[in-house]
Length: 339
View (cartoon, rainbow, N blue to C red):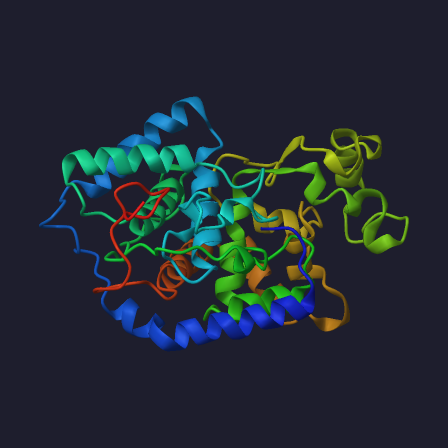
């Protein structure tokens, strides 16, 4: 999840995303296929898996980071690999937007995957497909569900820095979060299931510091936080550290590196680390009437969560892909080919 964004900007982003999806999203998704590379690059999946396993040996956080990259790519102009582009004379990189700067990570691993695939089958596998494959492999390696990844995306030749500043944010109200997901064709079940990616990974103190001592400018902690959990977080993230506190905290303290449903059990106990986690159960004014039952259901059934998560990841992977003659197959994920 990303940093906060103002509601007027959200509404503009919603309109823009809906326009993109309406133009080519459904048609593009229909052209994707799980067997797309069977003839042209049959070892694509095993190559992605091998590189990620090697990276995981030295970086246990990498699985969560690679899953997150699919969110941050697909929510901006669809799943087109635009997030991977570096700054250039003609491109303002999405990596430097507020939600991504000093937060999104894992790009060197994607570079390694691309290099391996370029050696095995040059000019064949898109960076956009690598992002989605890496997310699925990461979920499975962490103990989560597996699913058949639809493939055949092509890479964008542009980035959308402004759009990347409107990603779902940790401090967004529940209605805003639901609106942002709905704008790209994801319903409440998809939203709650995809939030479950927070069952692994870490978050910096700065993304939830306000919940500990000055929630919504009240000078008091978030009233939905469990008291014992609040005390633990205050020790990890002292107010004296200020807004620059980048110390990492487990998103799921119970099983921080295992993809399971304990994330939802934490929320039921008022131990959701991020505001955007807890609001699904505890948003005021009845806002959580459609999401709270889903949280409760996933807390009680890991199988239900896994099935819904796999479905939602597939739907997210189908957001406005470039297919056919659109875009290109980048030789280097960080630059367009004409560079």
